[in-house]
Length: 275
Image (cartoon, rainbow, N blue to C red; front, side, top):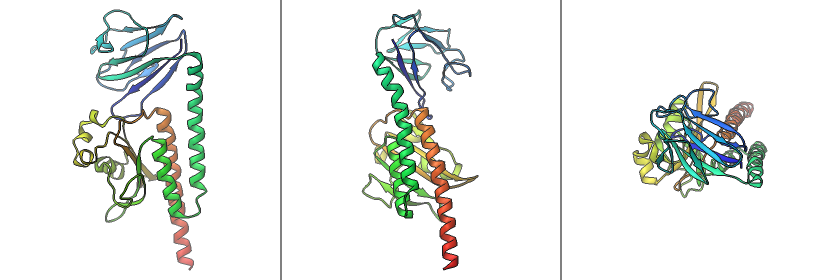
């Protein structure tokens, strides 16, 4: 039967794969593996997952840190009779067998996500007013990241400022992770965390503990090499896995949002100069 794999990397999108019946998949750190897990605890060629038409079987390939099924180390080929948590080194992978109808729905869900992202992008582009555009942008990213609240923060000469927010009682005060925001604004680096407890550099920060943040996504808005702001979303509940597809959609949306902001700023300056 078909199956789905979702791998939970500490600070990266979660790879999600739909496996067809009769397939075989290699798992490891090296390029060329069907499921590449870029983490030092994972061996270059770590494990192999295969289907013989009757079910799925997990084989460890002599990895240094071992392969596990529901906390038990796999010493010999292990049969996966149903849903299970697999672990390769320190990386957890959710294994879920699917019926044919479930597999078809899973494939259709990805297309639905793309369609929804396109609709959200179109909606932001149709905003007539700058405030409407900023508000639509932060609502869109919060939905795409499957979080509860969001902020659009613009970089400033003196200090960053919240330009739009949703799902918060203090729409003009940033109440999220200052570490993730600084990382985006100062280094141009994004942060994705499904479970912040697995990120020591983030989980112990005062802003994270004070707000009880469990999951977040924070991406920079860039005009070439210049960071002009960031889109941020978080949740106090453990987040749904932000997959590679979700990250692709979020990054594409942020690129468009940055272009809109730059174009709108240039237009406003031109109108002000001609007034």
